[in-house]
Length: 126
Image (cartoon, rainbow, N blue to C red; front, side):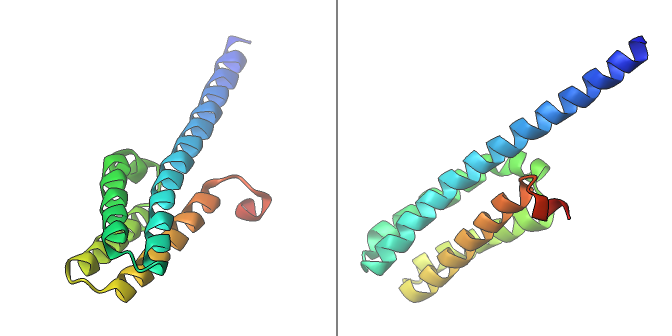
């Protein structure tokens, strides 16, 4: 009987850890997405300084969370977002606002997709 209780305890702890990690991942991604959306709004208003600043803040925030997100997410997804943010900010250096906005929108959409893909919705399980 004790093996049954140990098995149930391990299963419950694994489930709890999974829920905590998915919730934490969603919080990290949503913070970064908020900064990217502010950068997109600044691009629409043609406020290049604010757009580039928010892009750099998003990159710094993503790098801050990169270690654990690399464990939680698939490496290809995490690397795609990292490279997308780096490409986006390279356009800030060359002062190309339209390319910056395009990359920012792509990274933002990719982050939304990754965040939604990790939740246990019925369409993710099928």
